[in-house]
Each structure stands twice: as structure tokens, then as C-alpha cells.
View (cartoon, helix red, strand yellow):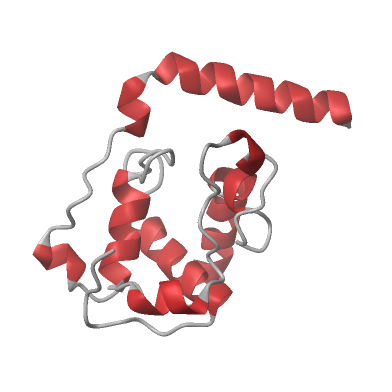
Length: 143
């Protein structure tokens, strides 16, 4: 198991290096129309199941199984990934802010706009709300 994990990490590191700087580019300013946008995708068992699958494939390595920022790759990062179960932090964010961060990335997290469909990214917003047990904030908060 340990060899498999090391192989996966090495493959991921080589793959990320091959993608270069473009992978980690992001725009910190959220457009106002996105900032105030409510999640257009209704939450359902199917939406959450797909979001869980996307999370396991793309997010778990850094954010951890339960979203606490303690995934197997987290220790390799300069800054620990945010705790997605942090009720205060998540309650301050609008759905649009969360969606934008998933879409454009937040260093060192890569952007997912070309890897996960728009509808599925909105599904991830629902999943993150369920991890933190928060409701959508309608008043944007500056971080």
C-alpha cells in the first residue's frame, strides 16, 4: 500500500510539474454577478453523490476525507488547505464565492473550470455546505 501511495504522489507531482505555472494561476477578485449568485443547481441525492465522487477524485488528497484540510498531500503544502467544516468561515462565504474558488483555484489549489462541469462545481458547493452544516450567505464577506 505504501508503494502505491508513493507512486500516486510521485505521478501527481510529475503531472502537476508538467502543467507548469498555468495550473496555479487564479484571479482573486470575484465578479459581482458571481459573488451574489445563488446556487442554480438544486440539491438532491444524485447531485450530492456526483459531488462526493468529484470531491474524492479531486479534493480529498489535500482537503481530507471529511474536509478538515488534513489530506495525504496537505503536509506537502506551504499552507494547510482550509478546513471546509469550519462553520464560521463557510457561513461568511456566498455560494458564488465558493463556486468561484473551485472554478478559478486559490493558490496552491488549481482551477477546476476545465476539469469539472459548471453544474458539478455547483454540486460541490452543496457538498461543502453539508460538510460545514452552513446555509448560503447572501451578503458577500471580504477575506
